[in-house]
Image 1: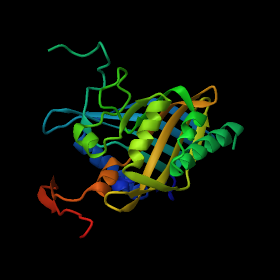
Image 2: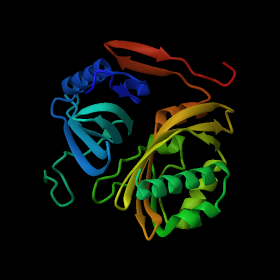
Image 3: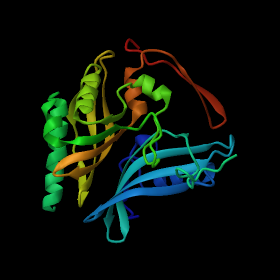
Image 4: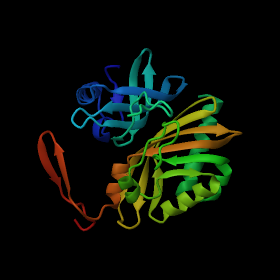
Length: 107
Length: 174
């Protein structure tokens, strides 16, 4: 990220900078130890990239599979990210990332 | 900015302005007859599992959310939504485009009719075009903020950081 990185939609929907996003990521890694991100779709144009993502993980306390979805856009300055926008859904119970129709494990 | 970006930017701007004007003809003008119009997510898991699920709780709070197939279903969604809220403005938006797909990020100003509240909500929309018309439209917004704008009573008890916090009801009169 650039030193002046600006996240328009940081934690709680509030703008933040490099430190805010670093803290958000660390919290996610701690509370979602097996977090897996699937990029379902991607659009790139000039200095911007948008991804349609699904985040899936196992809740360590309950053992339940969880997921949330969202669209994230980044603007680059050279090789570094200068801005971020995001809209995500609330966490919900979900399926393991590897389970696609017809691939579910039978118990 | 490429011609495609200008075109998709103008397309989404025209449609969103149609939503503000409650102009149902915008649906016929900008959407493909086979449009798949998703507002936040789906009540029943889609086969590819690409779309977010909406909980029954969320759907009860905001019953116009979900998947709407075809132009008439989109018009019915807009009519249902406009019985409950008005969109009075859309803020500056970023639009990017690649081939027949595009995405927009911005905010809109929502006025709830039953609770008479006005709030600004961030949104993003991912859309796909066929024959110059939108054939896939997936709109995401902060449903918590939207539902809160309609809330008229009831407190919440939240367990976070090892402490239980009570969030009192935000009533219109409060």
